[in-house]
Image (tube, rainbow, N blue to C red; front, side, top):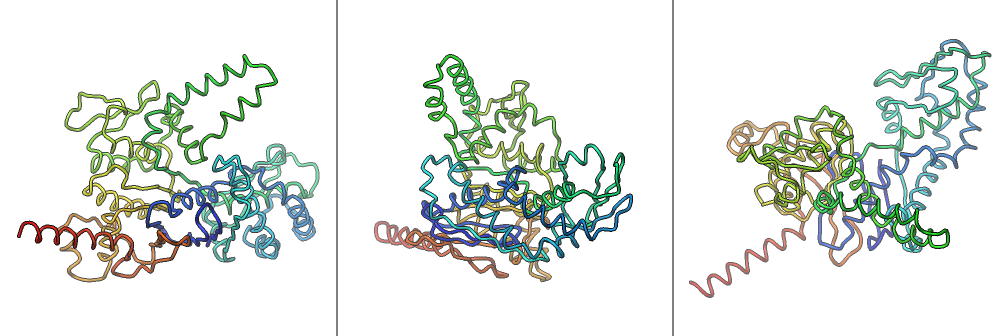
Length: 458
């Protein structure tokens, strides 16, 4: 799937190919990288609510009537969702995609907490997705049908990695497969195509971990004020307080406020959380009974430090540890704004290897970065996939693991120029990728350092 966008903030245009397993957004500050990362998060999460399908009700009803006249009615009924797509939905693909991007653009102002709708009045978006991609997604995706019909009359199941949907009628009064149930099936099929489990770690994550409690107290104070206020100023008070943060920040605040409840869940990727703790954090992240983040350093296991007493690295990575231990699922999209945030160069190298590890565990990773260390280490991970008898020796010498390496075709890279507003796709070869804006700075610093030294001290 390819997602194109124009006029998003200062970014004039960008094109992101989601078929890559790792997407790197590289370049200068204030060139639109974070805006684009946020815009991608909006695209991946906007169809979380089924209400977004309301505008397509007439289309689903029209298609349901067509299907109703062609189905062989029996009990149980087996529906092939791929056939449904090919025969009935594919001819309307353009109309469906237009609905998606219309909803996307209309939701940008609320998503960014921008009270001026005009900021996104010229924003445009486009989706390109082949029929084969859609069919593959239908086969792989779980199917969730939220339907009154299902609750009353029908049990529905979908075999894993199969396009077949089994409908067993339990208390049905007739032999008809009703149009309303078919509409629900079509709506759920559409929902499964455009809803992606996504977690974002914004650049503000360090502050969120520290101040989430204070923000919660402020929210409680707001509700108290609302109860005490009169009707005339209630809306003014609400307008001044609600939606003050872009949704990525708001979602992270909500997670930080609900750590006790969320920590009851267990992810299958707890081992990755352990690796991140032991290889980079050098200590353990724990959630207290009061829902606070604590850190136990390996060198002082009797200490249990509140997050505000820890170093900036712990503040930056603790939410990622929590996500991996309690919330992560295979196939999730993971967006990290500046993974190098607050990290020593050595740990920037380790976090680059960890991103490769995440990709090889089945995550789709999108990262915006300024770090030359991360880019160079990504190049090492790519070069080590070359079939060569010397690779094993190099991996052992420098401490690489097989599950960190990345093939060139897995990586997509986009560069953002300081004097331009377009993102450019950078070719990734067997030797990796080159980011001129970063390489040029390294070159200038090396040259100026040599010149200053030899002029003054030699």
